[in-house]
Length: 148
Image (cartoon, rainbow, N blue to C red; front, side):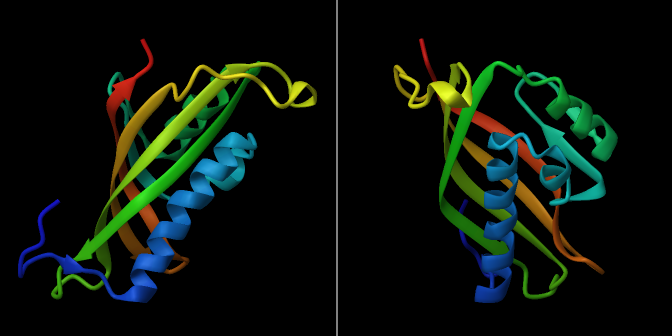
């Protein structure tokens, strides 16, 4: 993501709020707290993966509820870059990197062994300021590396 005079680094409060949404989402997914995971999105949000597009909280929720109940996952997010147009103070864009670990097993079996990250990827996010605060209006998951 290149900076220009059109899109500059967002002010610190906006950066913090948008980063907090991303972190809350992955932590909630890893804890299977899908109600909390959905709370970071607008009602009409779009969640795009490499294989599917989910439109609205109902479809995003169905995607989350279809996750493998026997899998333990952990997401690590980093390298957040949140930008904002000076003219568009109620919207922002973001790029962050994530490591995704997945292994079958129960919480009681922890620690689980892993052969490394299942995926390294990017979240391309668009945020909107709503009456309830900042929310993700669009998230695109872009795989960069996957396990063999």
